[in-house]
Length: 108
Length: 115
Image 1 (spheres, one colour):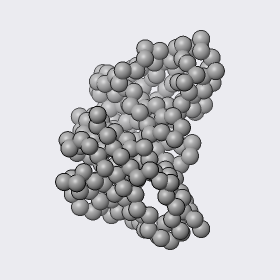
Image 2 (image 1 turned 120 degrees about the vertical axis):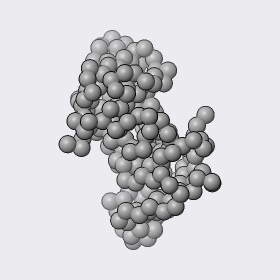
Image 3 (image 1 turned 90 degrees about the horizontal axis):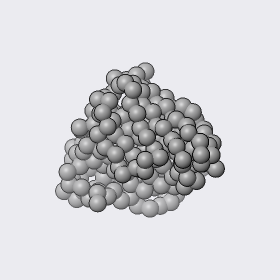
Image 4 (image 1 turned 120 degrees about the horizontal axis):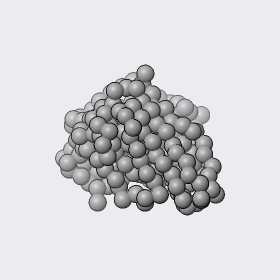
């Protein structure tokens, strides 16, 4: 069974702080890794993709991938109340497997 | 056009009804997907179409019947559903299903309630 595990949360972070979200995956054949943001009642929105070991930065978001440890993380700097959502980690090759999601709340 | 459009947005149907969900994309993507998402759960893959052919059926009950009339359209035909089938049904597309390198673009979903 190919699995993606996320820290269960919920996670509460003060506005302006760094939010750190973590994810591990079981399938070593996974080639693509993604972070999706999902607001309540809405569909998932792709915010970051990463394919190689190391860090990838996009604005306030940084994704980190360590294939040896089968670990993916997402850092959100200068957290804003609008970042409050559920964050889904996804990993795979031919098809994506989603983690359970981490509910993030940014407190003003 | 970078959107995946799903209709209807909301659907209430009885257990004896037949209805269809529709999905359309004009991004030239060759892979299209149906996912089911229950409350507070991650999306679960139902079907994958690649180049208009069914590539994956994740052991979905036959009361769900997918159809891909052309490269831009994906339908999900519903018949004799159960109340436990109530969920958010998500359509997604990607450039190619062989390598999910580009991630999926999700539609806004259809909120289905079976009564």
